[in-house]
Image 1 (cartoon, rainbow, N blue to C red):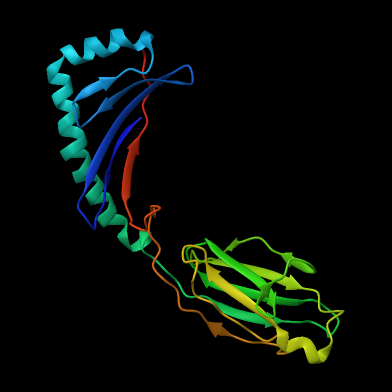
Image 2: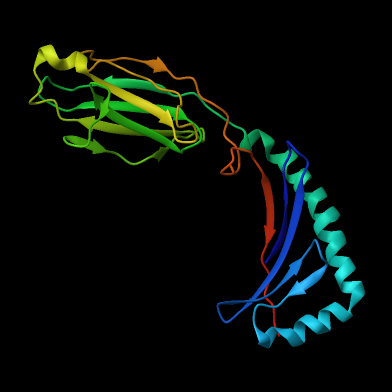
Length: 216
């Protein structure tokens, strides 16, 4: 497995070339020292052989630091409209009869990493709630529903309930609230930007990775 990484905010790059054998790590390339790392004694023969081939080492250095990065930037540029795409959903509350569950339905959102849930007095509900699956829309966006059983809820308590839509990428995220007592409510949430991959420190990075079969 080999590939490269590029941080489009800092410009930092990195590359990797790792091989395995029989389900275990076999040998990997250290781009900083331009040497091969052999975690097991059995890989030392391969390590010494490859390090004697200076032309091969230089080829991997050029690929991981230049060619791979150039291709990665091209791919990111080609797919930026998809990688950074965000669609705002509409959220509706529907109830067929006074005794039937109230359905909170969100449709038209993108990407599909979202949370849709009911809460009472600001606290998320887990009982009397039925979560539906995330489904595809014909335009490439998604939809999801979550039902709340209100058979035991008194009319004067309806104002304590709300349906919340939130993008999973943003913990403080965009929220849509609605009062259960309304038959139909359509609301728009404010969504953020979705990145291809988010690091633990909050920065975004783009990756290009390829897999290959290695025969000793």
